Image 1 (cartoon, helix red, strand yellow):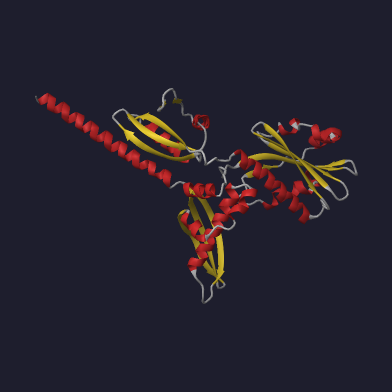
Image 2 (image 1 turned 135 degrees about the vertical axis):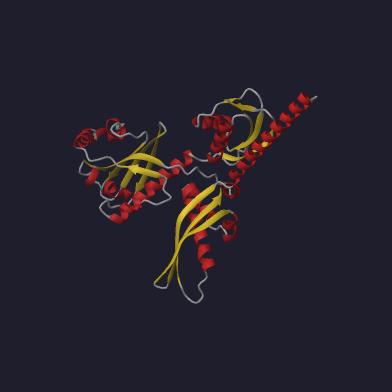
Length: 359
C-alpha cells in the first residue's frame, strides 16, 4: 500500500513540474506579441517659447518615426498611399517609445526618440490599404557604374566618373543596400576598354570574381550631347534582370543632376530588393507543430527562431501533455516557404501527418 502511495506521489510531482515548466514556456511565447519594428535616433528640435508643448514635439517624433519605417519597408509606389495617415492611427500602432536624449541649446529644445511599432498592427494597417510590406533586410552589393561617352567613344570609369565618385555621398538610414564600389585597377580599365564595342553584352565576370560578393549591379550609362540612357544589369540571388532609364537634358558634370540620377537609381534598386523580400500578409497559414516536452533546449531554440522570423505572423501553445508541447504557428506564406525558412535555421520537420513533428 505504501509503495502505491509513493508511486502516486511521484507521479503527481512529475505532472506538477511538467505543468510548471510548460506554463513558463507558454508565457515565454507572449514576447511574440511585442516584437516590433524599432526606429531609433529620431531627432526633433523646437524653439523653446511661451507656447512650447513637449507632447507636441513627441507627436512630431512619432510622425517622423512612422515616415522612416514606411521608407524602410515599402517600395516607392506604395509610400504615397500612406502619406495621409492620422496621428491617432500612428499612436495606435506604437508598442513603446523612449526618450534617448533631450537638451536645451540656445533656447531650442532637442529631442532624440526611439519608437517601437507593433509589427502585427503595422501589417494589419497596411493590409487595409492593400499594401504588402517587405522584410527590412540589409544587403551588400558590388556596384560598378560605367559612363560610355558615345560622342568621344570612350569609357569613364573609377575616379574619372562623377557618378562613381559621388555615389555613396548621400546614403540614408532607411537604405537597405550597402554599395561596395570596385577599387581602381589598371588591369580592369584596360579590360573594359577592350570590351567597348560589345559592352552591353559583357558579363563582367573577370572583375566581379575579384570581390567576395554574391550579388552585383552593373550600371552602363550611355551619354551623348544632352541625353543619358542607363542600362542596369541587376544580378541578385543568381537572377539577372535588366532595367532601362532615360534622362533628357542631363549634364553629367553637374553635381545636382548627378545627385538626381543617383537618387533615381537607388530608388529603383531598393524597390527591386524590397520586392524580393515582400511579405504577403493576406496569406495566414495555420501550421500545427508538436515538440517533445522533455527537450527544453529544443523548445527554447524553436520559440526563439519563431520570434525572430518576420514571416511568422503569430504563434502560441494550444495544448500540452506529458510527452509533447503543441504549437500553432500563423505563417505569411506557403508551407514550402515555411519549411525553407526553418531549414535555413537548421530545423527539420516530419510533415507526414496534419500535426508536424519537430525532429
